[in-house]
Figure 1 (tube, rainbow, N blue to C red):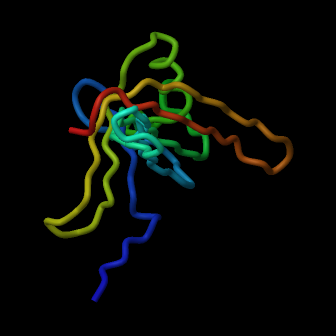
Figure 2: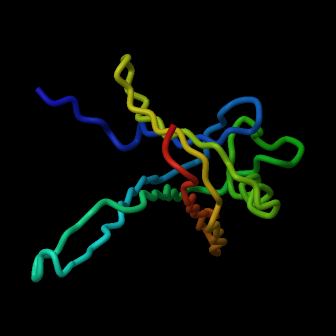
Amino acid sequence: MSNFIKGEVSILSIHDGTSYKPVACLTSNAIATDLSVIESTTKCNPGIMVRQPGMFSYSVTAEGQYIDTTTVGGDDAKRSHDALLAKQLTKTLVNFKLDTNVSNAESIKYFGSAVISSLSADFGSGDDLATFSLTLDGNGLFY
């Protein structure tokens, strides 16, 4: 029998130098991996394409509701656009953890180091809640 994992239990966290703090309040997050392919043909095997694995890369994307995490009275147990922007402005690599949060020893966790390559905030009018989106471009391999 398959053990299905609900997307809502997956938690993306950013390390602050002391501990991992969840990115809040996420509405979605994803991880994408890529492996480039090196293609070549030679006179030794004319007309035959030879393919080899190339460079591995990955990115993590997330979207969420903007909350105050940095001012007095803000929720400093979490990370949101305000705290992430401070990291992006200083061009700091961030360490992250993406946890499937399954309540057993087989919980799948991805750990990595990344650049905050894209960060945006959307401030609508009326009843719209402020939201943000984030892209982390991986540095090296998962660890």
